[in-house]
Image (cartoon, rainbow, N blue to C red; front, side, top):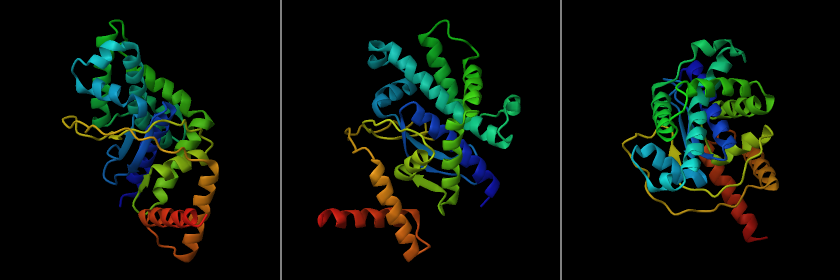
Length: 257
């Protein structure tokens, strides 16, 4: 594995994920790439905005946008920030937490495609929309990255992903890392996740909305204690094996509680 590319990819994806959570969205899972730092996969979840996200990226006129254009514009601006954030976080890390590398910022092809789509959508909805809006957002993101309460979650999440054997994390461990960094996660209704690397020709399948029980602080402590115990028993667990074992033990406790 190319460790340098993995590290850059970890910061790229972590930046995208943290800014997604800032927008009250979520992430079902993340997997790094060791061939291209911009080719990681973060399965972001639009939560209550999912229908607007699908409508915006459809490229066609949609009733939901006509009925609530202001909401659609707000969602598009959230998405613009998310798709710019990955490259900004990677660049900030590469330049030792300096904004001197802004002029050298490169947006990977996948992100650039989505940014272009969002810019076109916003110009359709807002005739006076600035041509340099993506550049304005990038400047705003770099200012936010200077804040410890923004950079620390990105840093901790990136390091957590890199420590896994598979170079991937599921939603539980993503949110566990963010909470450890002091990030407050907004409780949301969870809908089907949409991968940020999804082919634009594929349409997400309709899926029933499911409300998940919010993760409480004591649950996090219990899971951490079980994880520590299991790793004392066996040190070479995979992430999936650990998750399965923790859930199994919790089910046993509930059965006899």
